[in-house]
Image (cartoon, rainbow, N blue to C red; front, top):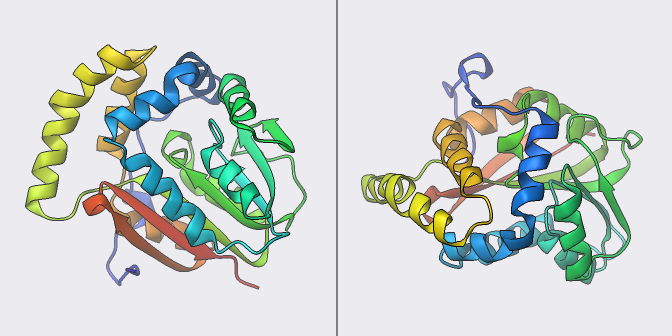
Length: 243
């Protein structure tokens, strides 16, 4: 695990552009929902399953835990959490993605909603998670504060998100992949290749691990740390809500 060190990027200098209006983002994911899981598995060379498995393990679920899965998508994380005995509430902007989650077998609370305006009471959940969704919100610090609001004191947050590869070899390979392989593969397998142009732009604009950790700390989260997955292409950020 790594922790933010002194001198890390300040919140004022972190750029989260390009950002999107929630209705526009939801509509985009509606268009890709039908082939979303297949496309992601192919584009990630099967790595996406390991990333989500790491997310579930990092939450440290105890049966009966109340867990909020924001940007739940097709429900891969939600279903895994429910199988561990968690009481899962799944929220996503896209009704079509949540329909796929239902087909996957997700039961319980499945809600169309916005991460920036969660319709839950303060301290309603023991744990909150967000996989590959924080990058799509317009105001990242505000969403992190909203996630903290609905997490009980001492509760935990796990964010799994694309990040910045560590080391010259990983970085060069990833740049080549984003520029060359991803657009071609998306045209072949996705139901909306333009959505993966958006994906490439948001990944390139996203801050590195230390800057995101700093932003989480500014939003009031404590014990912020991260773990790189697949050479830093994805990073798993963990934090707790102070008591």
